[in-house]
Length: 434
Image (cartoon, rainbow, N blue to C red; front, side, top):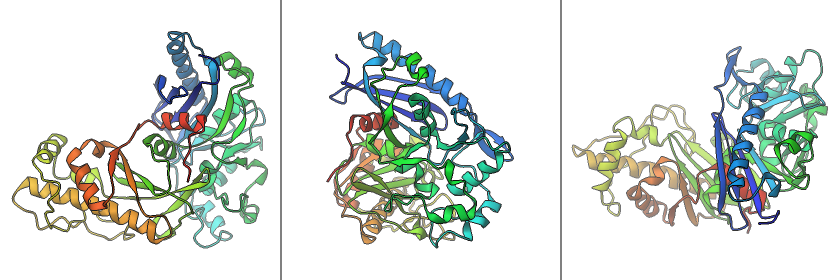
């Protein structure tokens, strides 16, 4: 197998680093995963040492190299790579790409002082508003750079790519979205400087899937990469998971049925609603519009354990509706498709038959899913044509048939649930299209 037929996807999650190599037919050739230490708290905020990311990444590449050698292949045979990371995790580095701050994790927040400064200048409805925003995180990172050594603001995926390319100051449109980058204008907002942003730190932004550079650094050479290996602008971990699922065309959606219910839909135009937490990522010439409900698996586990869910589901008739109109929630409060922090779960009247009760709960979550896709359409997205499903709920065949009936479209299990596989497809150039 000659160089040019292997594509590497790297996924940086909260708990580990995973990498997947696919060939020209998109068949998995090698796969490796290593855990990351738990984030540590600094002033009550989750942080990680970026150097741990790199050392874990080196271990993963070493594992891949061993797998490739068994097939008479090598890391140098990889034509292109793409990296995804947790959305909003970022650090500041010096000009030599050495961290000058810890990495503040995507779920670090309570940046109250910074939020006040942003609110003075940001336009109404800006994604940068709030004490947990990405821009507030950047302003706090700047305050940690007491010696003024910072040269680059980089997200998790940016920093790994920079070390491979031996150059910093680059990012992709998906990672910078929550930082406040203007996707339609393809520029950083002019008001950033007024609220204290050191604009020299901001990266040049590439479209997802475009070449940013090559793996030309001495460190990349030590890992076995060829200087001809292309480094492709990556994405966030959730978008990589979307790509892995198999959706590729306008109107196709992906539903993640885990603890909560999250949906994303491919749209030919951006869809936004601050009130419902809806925003759109651009990949290629299309957009991924989505939102997340508090409903999902956690609402079911209030009443049934996993074994009961499996046993009772098998006894259901998914084509026959219970006519019980439930809105299952794990606790008070909803964000999408209904934005109401005081919304109470509606899970009564409860029938005596547990099978019937569970079916009504499953139907209720399916109606929330259908309502979510309908809301996206009301806001300008195309009509839903197909759903790919990931998460634990994807394994419930009865629920899948029920959801297909309620959403009135085909529902199939995701092609793959591994974000690293999605990034490998991105490296290969397999992105959504009209």
